[in-house]
Image (cartoon, rainbow over all chains, first blue to last red; front, side, top):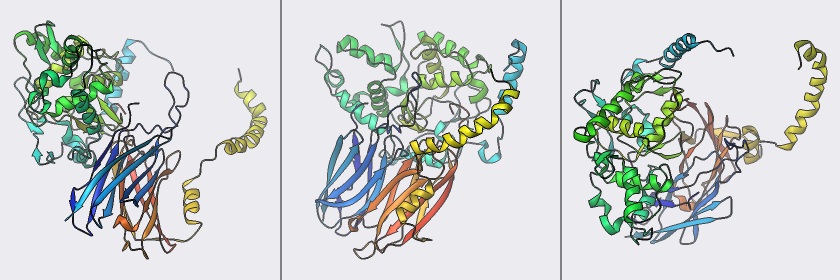
Length: 109
Length: 288
Length: 150
């Protein structure tokens, strides 16, 4: 599998106290662990993104545990109340221990 | 199970076809009237049928999808194919092969140089003595000019690149050459389109010309246009080429599929593109 | 090869195997049911209805990617907010889908994702409020099987 690529959509500007919508997507096969290899008949081991979280200036905004029923290329949308200018850091955790991150700045004004 | 001779197979095929094409209820009979607007740009999802095409009107496959599936294509962030487009954009500027070149070395910014390209493929190549699909053109650039390895037809690199290049033509009308040296390829594609094959003894036309708009079990049959390829299919959970889709159709009617990139599929791709002339390029589209 | 008479003859032995064998198999891999997961989440507390809005398509064209959106009525303050929402798919081999965890920073208890549904079934959302009460909503999604490439 190619290295998962995260994509995030965050408004660049917001008013103080405004509730904004954040959209995220990461390329990942989300192998459920329930599919069989067509050739060998063996179960393909589970490998999914099992956790996603978003932090703003070090404070947790939103977190989700994911199970194999989440579709490939997992898409997650949520809201955030913007208190001040700062940076949102996004973290996806893979079953194999890999961690993928990206970040976006928001300016209040 | 007992299998009869040829006669009973035919009979079976007739039954199968009849039972597949049921329940063309009024609610499902027609494409829906939704408008495809992507980030402010309106795309053409219906057009007059080109000369020689026996359809009242052309409708993009998008018009046959449910509102939830349609919505995935109306926002470039929500469209899951855009991950592959990002990958293609990165590859565009990445040097590969012993000539030390990237796509960008010759073509510059794709936004300008690749505008309109997708709309005109497959395209005649004097050098090959046959048409180029976008895939074979990309591989010719890779092997001859970049001196890099060719990509496999359905590889993630190839799909990312065809999606990225295709996106530069989004909204432009499909228009392929069908005369001159392309005429015999076009004729071959047309012949394939109307030829019944496989155990179910069906042609492309049986579903996509004669019965579009009806339900094939729980699926709403489209006219089978290819203006959105490579397409992100929910079933695949990823992008796929038109030739992959052709293979799937042939397997469904229990025919032995041609290979991706075969002369047969290139001819069929050309004919299908010509049937959809005037519809907007939707690459990368989203279907069920 | 066994014929029908043999089957009748060995039928009782087969039943014994079934009685002894199946619970052992079940022990080897226990998949919690939807009810198990809800009980684990709520600790058996009563669950109210009316505050959770769950949005799903009535018919999904393909079970591989079904959009699910959930929101819960709440002022989302430090004193009164939605802590977590558990999403379950009742008819999947494993009902677990996702657990959304909100904070004061969330502004509103809203999240959406795309999920896999193996067949026509109910999607369930259970919300845990900061005061320890629970709310839920349940929607049926019809999952179609494509005729072509289904």
